[in-house]
Length: 370
Image (cartoon, rainbow, N blue to C red; front, side, top):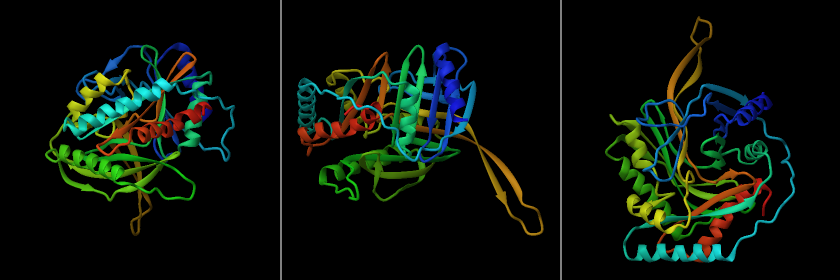
C-alpha cells in the first residue's frame, strides 16, 4: 500500500499537480493529500479545511492545499538503514564569517536591550540528484519521532523535512503546544548536560508562550522541562495544555507564530531584525505546516455487563500544526538546507556556528552529504 501511495504522488508530480505526503510523530501511518487543480489557494479565516503551508513572515499569506483526495498507508521501517554514497559538503569560509558577525550583531542588540533573544539562521546549498521520494522514505526511516513530510506545488516548489516541534494542536476546545529550545549533540549512552545559556533560553520561550496565551485560555498547565532527542540532537521541551475560551483558531495562531524558538522576543522587533540582517529569504523555513480543520475518526469499544461489545465511532475536527524546522527546499539538482539557533546575551558566536553545523546534519545525512 505504501508503494501505491508513492506511485500516486509520482503521478501528481508528472502532471504538475499539488500533493503532500506526511507522517505524524511516532505513527506508522503515512498520509497522502492530493489537490486536483494547480491553483494556489490561501487561508483567509482559518475556518477552511485542508493542509496549510505558512511562511516565516507572518505578514505573507498562508498557502492552503485542498485535500481533494486523501489516502493513508502504513509504513514499517526497515531493520537496517539504506546505505548510500557519501558526498562532501563544502562550507565557504565567507559563510562562517558572515554568520559569526551576524550573531555578534544580535548579541550587541541584546546588550542594548533592543530585545531579549533572537533566532538567527543560514542557508546551505548542496548538490542533490537523489529522487525526492527516496529522500522522503529516508526521513521516515531515520526520524520516527518527528513530523516528516514531502510537499509540492507546481507554482511554489518542493520542500521536505523532519521537524520535532509542534506549533499547536487543537482538538475541539483542547489546545496543546510546546516550547522547544536549547540544542546539544547526541552522544551514545550519554544524557544531555545543559548549561545556563540553554536553560535560560528555554525559560524565556516558555514564559513568552504562557504570557501570550494567558487571556485566551483556561486551565493552562505546563509540564516539567524534559530533554528530548531529535535525531542526532538533544533539545529542551516544555509541553503546555489548556482549554481555549471563545477564541478563534486564527487568533491563537497569530499569537503563537512565529514562536520565540524560531524568531525571538519581542516578536515584532526580532522579526524585523531577522528580515533586515539575514542575507537571504527564509521563505517557508521556520513557518508552519499541517492539517487545518480535518476530520478525525476515533473508534471506541465499550464493554457493558450482559450486552455484547459495542463499538462507537466519534468524529472530531482537529488542527495539527508543526513548526517547519530541519527542512530543505529542492530546486532542480540543488538542495537548500536551512538551519539556525537561538541567541541570548550569553551566546558564544563560534559555538553558535557549531550548533548550526550540528543541526544541518539532520538533512545532510539524508542527502548523503557530510
